[in-house]
Structures are given as structure tokens and as C-alpha cells.
Amino acid sequence: MIYSTAQEWRNAPQKRVLLFAMSGLGKTYLSNLVRDQGDWFHYSIDYRIGTRYMGEFIADNAKREAMKVPFLRDLLRSDSIYIGSNISFDDLRPMSSYLGKPGNPELGGLEWDEYTRRQDQFQKAEVAALHDTGHFIQRSHDLYQYPHFICDTGGSICEWVDVNDPDDPIMTDLAAKTLMIWIEGSDAHTAELVRRFDKEPKPMSYDPVFLLHTWKAYLAEFDIQPNAVNPDDFIRWAFAKALAHRQPRYKAMAERWGLTIPMDAVAQVKTAGDFVDMVAEALEMRGN
Image (cartoon, rainbow, N blue to C red; front, top):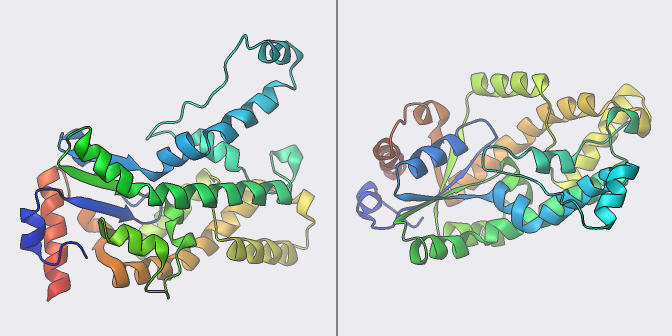
């Protein structure tokens, strides 16, 4: 790790941190909190994906729908109107909408081949955005003169990492530049994530091997054809599987490359100073 002791972390003139966890456990909360206090640059992986790497895909998908409306089609062809996504740190719905869900087209589902094509696009985009972290560390310091840096990753980072490979290219790159912190949720937090997701199921991105296995298992268990699948029902069913699938990956990432901080500790952080203290305590505990 780039900081081996709590004192080294506290004394560092340029603190660099990367947070990873399931969505809803506090990554963006902490990132927004330290950024709003003025000394931290917030690099959002999902925002980078949606603007730099998938912005054209997202906009073209919206244009494709608009082309189905004769009035809008004529305006688009003559460049009389502009269609683009208004993605932000706090609103990633344009990207989620593009990723979509597999299943019955009449219920808003995508054909399996189209769904997996978009999943592949997202995987490439996320890996590229993760490798851009070093560029933004330098940019935030040299251009914007921020002393500190925090990277807010998407929940799917663990899908592209080989936790059994100490030389995994993603993790070795990130660990050489940032202090990597896993926010670990309890069973109660997991239950709350499932409850939230069940209320409002959102598209997610998965390792293609896990995704295909889960899709086939769903079709077999419910004895249903792909085009008859209710997209929300599948996504809900897959989410519970994903939690169990991702938890050991996150844990292995933290054990090999970083720190683990419980979500309960995150909930107590109210200032940037609290955040620095929380990380220092985690470093002390790891050193003992």
C-alpha cells in the first residue's frame, strides 16, 4: 500500500484514495463530503464512463428512439435539434437506461445478444476509466491544484479483476497510485440493499461468465423462454445472486491490495477530518 502507517497517511501532503464496494454503501457519500470541503478532487468512474467512453452510445440510443417519431426524425436529419445525455455525478440514469435489462421487448427488455453487446461495451469502458485514474491524479494536482484525490468506483470493479493473480493489471495499477479501501456492509446492510433494489431494480454490469450462468439458471428454474422474461423479475433475481458473487471478490481485493472499513464507521464521518481519522484508524488496525 502507498501508505503503510497511520502517521505516514496523516503526514502525506497529497492523500490519494480509491473506494470500492457495492452501490449504496457510502462511496459517493464520502466522495461528495470531502470534495465539498474544498481540498479533494472527486474522480467518479461512472461519470467518466458515461461521458468519455459511452456518451456516444447513450446519445445514439436516444436518437434511435427519436427517429421512430416522424416529426423528430426530420429535425434530426436536418441537424435542427440536439439530443445528448445530461449525466451527472448524482444522476447516472442515462447510462443505466442504455445498459438496459434482458427479456420481453414489450416490457422494455432487450434481446439477449443486444444486452450482452452493451455489457461488453461497459466492461471495456470501465476498465479504461479505471486505468485513467493516474491521469486524473496528475491532472487534479497540476491543473486544478487540489492537494488530495478520491476515486469513487462503480460496484462492478470486482467483475473485471482476477483476485487470485497478484499481478492483476487493474489492481496493480490502482494500488500503485492510491490507497484502496473496501467499504464492507453487514448482513443488515445487505438486506437493505436487496429491499431498495426490489423496490426500484436498476441495470447492472456483470462478469460475462457469471451473467450467462445466471441467465441460463433463471430460464431453467422458471421454465421460460428468453423473450417471455419479465426484465425486472430477472434483474431482481440476479441481484441477490450478484451480492453473494461479489462479496468474496471484494474481500480478497481488500486483503491483497488495501484496507477494509465497515459501513458503520462510514456513517459516522461528517467532515474531511473525520475521513482522515477513519482511514488512519484502519491503517493502525491493519498494522496490529
